[in-house]
Length: 382
Image (tube, rainbow, N blue to C red; front, top):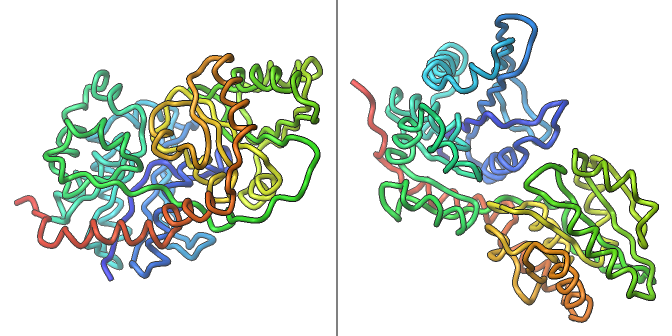
């Protein structure tokens, strides 16, 4: 099997245990499929010191070999955007700490800024094919604002292949690719803990939301619409909120004013979220942009119908068989919830179709097809 160096600057830590978890799940899918894959994770973090560099090698909970480079500095924000400096730094780390024991066939970078630009630098020096997987919703802003936009353009243009997590993101990147054939869609992986179970009977209406509660997410529209639904329903309405963030403060401070119950769970591990979803009637997701939405895919994999904003990639995950799409006003969200409450969804079928798309085996096969097209595409610098 091919040897893959999987480069990311988004990686879970104690402060943010879900940061880049979808990237790690891609790597684990390839690892379980038999690829000789190693993660190279780079953290650039704040410190009171001018500069401190730490390195670590370990196997994560799935047995995936991981190299961790941590750059700590009072100037961390400047270092993070200094792409040429970062590229040399990470390349030297590879040469000194990795190259003697692991020489990859493919460099696979995740997210344009800064990983794909750093990966482009490394791949050219090693003469290896470079694959970029894009998850990021702020690519256009980067090209408008960054002085290193030319490096991003070169990384995309010269990549051996680009994968994106949704057709929506594919369409938005077409004009930055060398050709349409350069881009393939490979979705995110849904953890196998999210599996169908028959929902227990319950007299109440159980709704669930899961997010890091900061823009572009919107909890106020959901709460406003549920207030209308609760006033119309003879059943008790309960909203389960998973996650933390600035948007929750006014909601939680005023929860006694609503006609429905709010249960705030905070951050939960995946098995705990899956357990809540098994008792959920409808999953709700309100946002102004989504390049994929892993939480929606997870809910669908359990068989929970979804009511969500009609934005970004969400129309490519949701149709009339598994949910309802709506524009972002309280009136339209309320109308969408009324429609969902009237429809008879086949939860088992929702789960079956989602698992076909998002399980780790299907995703690894999709990446494998991309890798198989790359023979001889690397070109080493003189």
